[in-house]
Image (cartoon, rainbow, N blue to C red):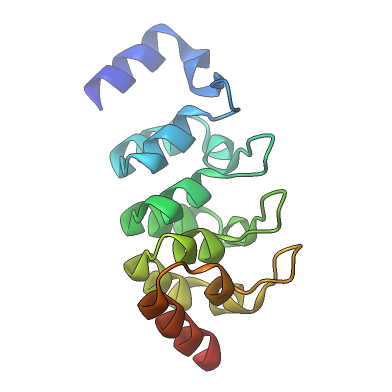
Length: 147
């Protein structure tokens, strides 16, 4: 975090720089589960917490896919509406977490935004449909039934 603070102090626009696939530092912080970096970004420019790549992926998508529940819940406290962001395929955070069997994230999403479990992708898939592991698929179907 100290390095990030030093960098942004010396180069205030560094937080808005994008990587080759359109990721911002917020995407990278979420991918690696660095909630304290997300907090720093929130203090400097909170809109960056919800920046989308050209594919529509948000930092919350990255956090959900990688299983970083603390980052997902932190981002939800800054904007619940952004928890419903969809990528260009129509995937929500619940789809991203389901695909990689991030069960702890899925449980948090049930508390944060249960209606995510009823959203279909553009291909017509629920989160349980994109779950690769059978045990995760059954768990997610149970979550969908109670939402």
